[in-house]
Length: 115
Length: 113
Image (tube, rainbow over all chains, first blue to last red; front, side, top):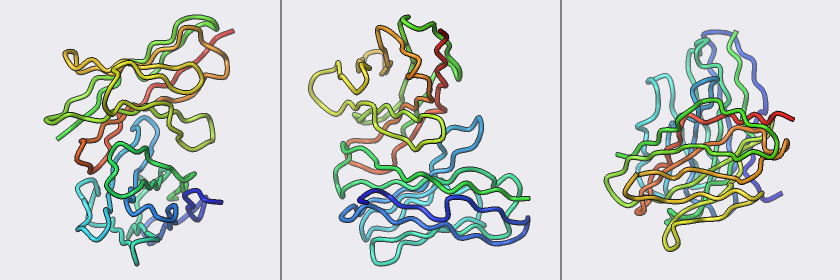
């Protein structure tokens, strides 16, 4: 399919472990976003990649969170030393370069549960 | 910096009644505005968007929204609710020069028979 793909779809981890979440954007989309969706918290912006520009990391909640995007395509969101409050659905989205008026295309998310 | 406020985390209407979901935005520059819908156990999908031109925009499933600059609002309406409209609705804003898309807290719509 041509949609945004995220893996794994579900992840259960123990408190203190590191996790990696993966996002494959739509081919040709060079803008990529990560959001976190928690109960009662709506969609919280985490980080935004636009082409070769420095990413906008202003939404990352702590230095335990980091993300990279290799080759302008696949992105990985890493959470180190996970805490129970990190439990949420992590959503990835992409859109075409430079087209601010074009909508985001979302993946189905990774549901992270920290026990 | 831009922000979005959705008034009412839960809205309940009867089937056939008017749906009104409120969204107010704050932006230092002209914004683009979006409404997204998330059905239970599904991903987000675009309902409608305002970029330029006509301030009344029509979306899928009979929804529409009106951009009112003077009120900094972009409320979502539908004349007659269907049971299938039960979902969570998110308003979002982005600056026209691009950047991050900021979402509101979401409004959960329930439709009673």
